Image (cartoon, rainbow, N blue to C red; front, side, top):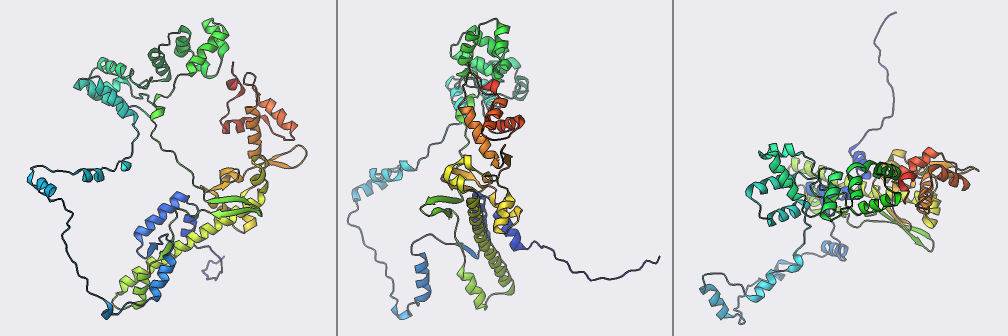
Length: 478
């Protein structure tokens, strides 16, 4: 068999990721805050792009500026600066100020200099709070240095996660010295701070609060595991105590703070700004895109005139301006395409989930990405990018767009129900149960089957863990 080389022509179609398509995909999957940051960065890097200032007369002034001719040279008048001495000057104060060795501030000037509305209060951190208390006890230089080292190794909850031996090695002091300073810090506010574990934290709080109940101390010292699982019978058997006494001691322990540094948490809350609003009106529902805070962009007219004029501009500069104009145009078009796509996706979601917007979570229907993709003629990956990190303000509350896509659970007599609706029913059942006799997972299964919902017990357990609901044994209260 002979081997030879031949040439063949083959026509194929292949998707090429053009710069325009790459930018559109990138902006489509960005959240609102990330989009604003990307626009601000482009405004800094691209001189041909500028932000439109939001004023009432912006468009009108721009048109008048183009239509109104420049005034003739003979119409212009010479500007003359006239200096006049103000007769209201207090010359006595003026002479006194410059005849004194120090600086004098008049009462009116001092009042204008201090604008108390401009001061912003800063929240005190846990380390600052402890260091301030340490300075109040007049420590020695050695105690101050070791105390600062200990405070610097506390985590956000106020626990010391470094051993005393390591602290002694870092400070170059003895273990006993570090232990003494640590014991002093453990008496500071908040109660329980600088503890090395939960047991020590709770014991410090009982000592500082004057709780001297032996049963409370014994449960904290040796039975925290049984306390966590609410195995009160094991505690009663081990301590040979009555159940009512153990329950009373547990109620005292519940008043203690397991995380002393919680109140000094410096993490600021992150507020959700919806990307789209859905309002109920007389004719149904109205969809309004939220453009507040997103800069409005346009091309800078100066560079357009520079390219059009042509003279006095070298070829390198022209190519640079053209590239930047092209990039700015792609950005503006991609932002418009992003907003348009979000609107179409929200419109499709509203069509499929109309009962949810009118009646609530219990009426949410099963829906997947393919349903919306087929409805608006886009790919599932595009719908996935649009719904990621995008939020909608609805009559039922603020929800991520991903919230409306969920799996289906079969009903016993035909039909399907959304998994989110089943989770809402489970939460409602748990909230209405008797705390002294909570429902087990199997009992919840039986109750849902009475409502024509066919679901397995392991699915109930999975949904319960997803919602942060404890098991029946841990929910039980005495």
